[in-house]
Length: 212
Image 1 (cartoon, helix red, strand yellow):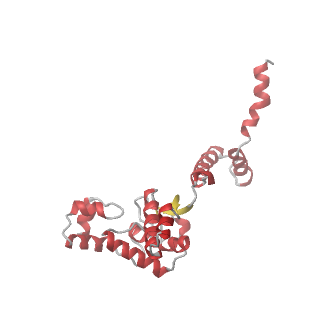
Image 2 (cartoon, one colour):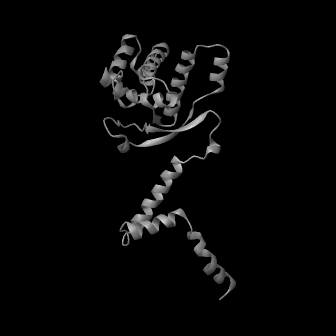
Image 3 (cartoon, rainbow, N blue to C red):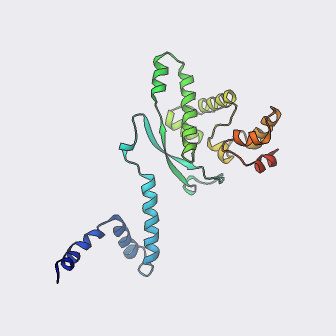
């Protein structure tokens, strides 16, 4: 036996000391995949990909940031489903920013800072292909239901756009529907191509024409 063969025999098994190998062994010995090893390995590969996506080391988060799970904003309507049946994505949110602290130090009203925070959190989730519900904001910012509802309504009125929370993204809950918003924008004199861009999420011209 030459040196290379001997080393391969001695050290190659160490490459199998992995989480994938442990899961493979569990699938085969405890979950009945003895004759379906190829399927088990494919499932394990996908499981580990999901774990990698959902697990972010704390070193990647800056002070004031947090990791939160948002409902996936993937172009599909995930309405009227249990949360465990809905795709989710991890999003990094700026819970407290230097701008927040500076505004408070300068004497700005707490409500104004809170409203900007709610807007920021919703927009950041959207940028990462997620959507937050009012209840997410309740828990994250310890705001009451009425505070969140009022904050969102005031920002939407001030900025002239729908904020991308679950109600508007997935058309769920007692929120202003896209159809109503399209009608409002048409009455305000906006043309349909511009309305496509103003809706959150952005709509196709065909969708806007259907609402109209």
